[in-house]
Image (cartoon, rainbow, N blue to C red; front, side, top):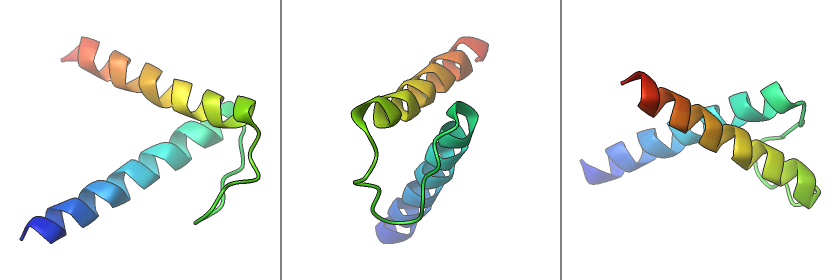
Length: 59
């Protein structure tokens, strides 16, 4: 049962990452994205954090 929840969490996080990337204009592909610049990767991570903080404030 634990593996099922872990897989669902990974899938949700992947969808969240793709959504944040599209909002900041970074094109991610499925799998390895090692060709991203530090600025692009940071903007995706920053958008994810911003969205998480906003969601927490709404609660």
